[in-house]
Image (cartoon, rainbow, N blue to C red; front, side, top):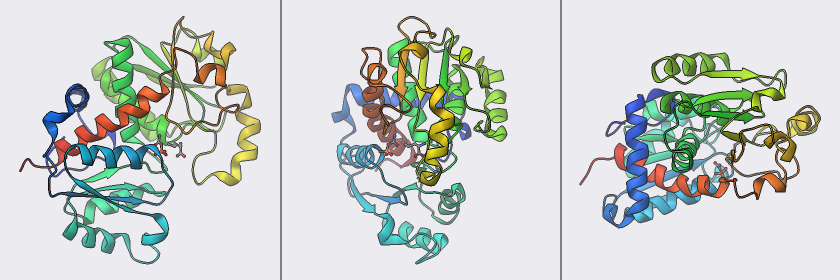
Length: 307
Ligand code: CP
Ligand code: NVA
């Protein structure tokens, strides 16, 4: 991860860059005081087209811990692409702020911000990718499972933004990932291919399946909402198709004994996951949420120059 670079996809990094971010995040978690002052006098713009609890909070807290300031720009305030073009918004923001974090519908919007803004742009979720989530998830998995090579994660649900970044991230850290999805909700071939190619170097196997035996023997099971932000009108249809993929006690029993449970959150309890699983001692969902803070603090640190 380079000074002044962007963070758009975990697949854009090298495996050793991913290791470096995760190692720095672990150092920050162990001793956050050491990093005070790094962002003094600097401002992060949080440009969001969709709602957020974790992403907004953790970026703001991470900025505070490094003595910086953040500026939240809510969807209705900016009118990305409607009130003003994305390119012009980027060319304004770069004059005032040192880093831009953006959560958008179209992935192209984040790419456009990165093209037009001469400051680092961080992808805080698009319809296609959620690279900040994947860093927090693999830090969490390393904390609980140690070396991830030879281990396997089974993601159950929609082949969506979270699934794509998990495949790419697993490939980077050497953890195999299976995406178990209903017919018609598979991950995009471009990301399956990219992840499989990265996995050839690191030993991770990345694949997709539609039958529940994909969970058998997994070291960790992950799920996400059935209808993502922007897909609300498909919720009823998805509810019907995804119900048999609910992560409940019976499905978890197919995984390795003591298998971890992960979820990016927000969770729709009673839909994609039951309380029994989300609240089990093997559930690490709030560790993931905490690790959003440390991994994003590491990303911002690496993308911005020391004073
Ligand atoms: N997991 C996640 O990105 O949560 P928010 O949508 O609340 O930011
Ligand atoms: N797939 C979900 C993730 C939320 C963090 C969505 O895009 O809404």
